[in-house]
Image (cartoon, rainbow, N blue to C red; front, side):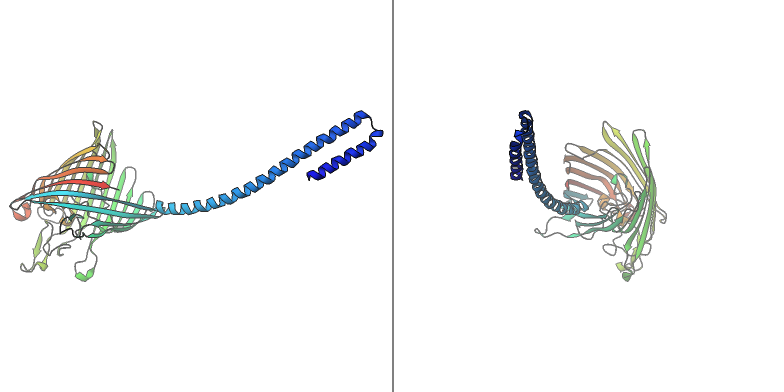
Length: 423
């Protein structure tokens, strides 16, 4: 195109030269200046046109690169979406333990506990969980004692559930689930921390009120003739009292065990509860003497003392079906919280749990040897080495076990040192 413009300009100049005989010198000079300006303008347009062609080619290349990057991003988003939907959490604990029971040799042992859970968010309002833990089939312990020449240790199914968040305030879950009931300061007084019920639960909560219902199969298979279903309902409220917060509530649990055989362990394992045997020489005829219609009252007061959290708590329970030894209570305090490097906590509680106050199968597996029919003190403390690692101790001091069943209680002490990690 530049060549054509040059020819046109040259022709115009020649034509102007032929006409110069009749045009004044000034007009001719002006004509040449106009042609020169036109030629410069055309050259400028040609340069701009070349730049536009180069820019167009660059834009096409950039578009191709962008399309490639977009595909990579989509692939990455797909992978990150999976990672966001799947969460893994768990913990590991190493424990040294010493047990001193009256009229028995002192016992010490080393134990481990490891738990891991895989939780998948399948949609905005549903999740599915799968958890495994060390331990055998004990419903209230996931510990494994070290020894046996380095033998491998058992790992069992600890959680398996589906959960639907029906609304912001209502949920429903089913399977082998985490205990849904509120426990003041996570006390194991009524429910051991390792006890994961099997059945279903639902809950509702607001800013100040909450309610929980759960149905639990102690045995769901009718084949063995010991099929039994239990249920519980708990409700409470949270109050602000100036700088303090009070959580208080009531619970009722209906566990119809009367006439039923032991649900776990040997035929005479009733975890401190009363039982009767139609044939004293045949333990398979032994059965629970009472149902457990448990009425619960609890309170948990949280405040601050010297810039550290202080919690005071108490819980009371009474079995409506038993004739005697039917009451249990606990009261205690926790000060501080081991939640990071250099942080610490101390705790104390006293409890008295008569033999038929609650179903012994679900209660603390460590206090007074486990189950019901025990009373005494519990001291604890912990120190945080970092956000996810702490060391601590628990001392079950001057526990007395078996007053209701033995007539004369047996002295029982247990001391534990733990180091625990979370991930």
